[in-house]
Amino acid sequence: MKFTLATKKNMTQFFGEDGVVHPATILSVGPLTVTALKTKETDGYEAIQVGTGTQKKERLSKALLGHLKGETFRTIKEFRTAPGDLAIGATIACDIFSAGDDVTISAISKGKGFQGPMKRHGMKGGWGQHGQKHSAREIGSIGATGPQKVNKGKRMAGRMGSDRITTKKVRVLDVDVVNGLILIKGAVPGKRGTLVEIKG
Image (cartoon, rainbow, N blue to C red; front, side, top):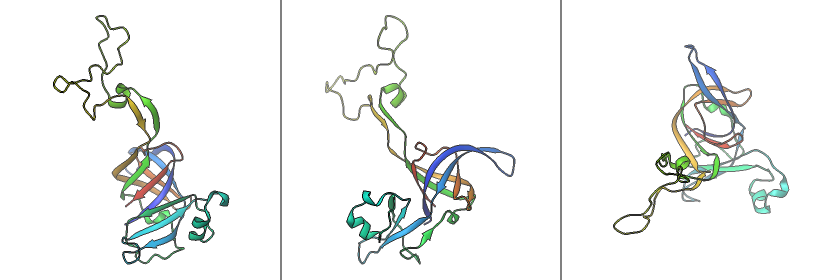
């Protein structure tokens, strides 16, 4: 399995060879460093642990600094896949992907705070006439006739966003190896600067 970690930059337009323009999201891919290899014999599962980015040494615990051999990675992630011929300290760049690949992306969506049922669930709201005064955006009746209570799972107002969103079969439009950029067709969850997982 091919994988990498990227940072969402911004959206742009990409003109294909056939002249069709596609909406695209620019993802900045920093080099990943393999920090640990998990095996079934020692850990019970197979995975590759990678680190990327930098931060202050004071923000890491002594145990983590010892594990990272003094490196100060900002992000550490595990990918459940066989280590293959990778070794600790190896570098993974963005050139493992190429234009035309279909990948799966995962990221944390934008947080929207506490929202009403119309924005959160797409409800149409109340009538706009016939005596309605302050209930245009209310949810309406929420009870049930039989049990006379609000059933669990009722769609109501509440916290919206800040959820992990996974999108499958997203097309890679272009890969800029020199600048470490990947162009993904369409929108990517999250705001600018969001960490994005890319799996192939």
